[in-house]
Image (cartoon, rainbow, N blue to C red; front, side, top):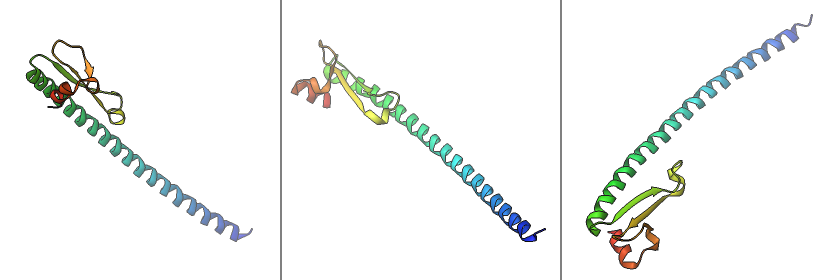
Length: 114
């Protein structure tokens, strides 16, 4: 029998095992980074939503105080992904219907901006 063939086989087998181990380590590292990334995304969303709710509540209170009876609110354009589309600011001046801020008169815009 040709002993060089056995040596070549052993050499290739060792190389294969080394590469398989490298693949396993790389896959484990990738999975850990993916898990970290998803955790940070969730934390970002949770903190954003907490801040958004707080700001929305304070905005409503302040607008009612400034206009003596109006109403205001913030709403997410895309509630499933709040970072992709933005926020709408809608107001209801006293004795009027709900309007997007861009559809208000100049004076109403100034009051809303306060």
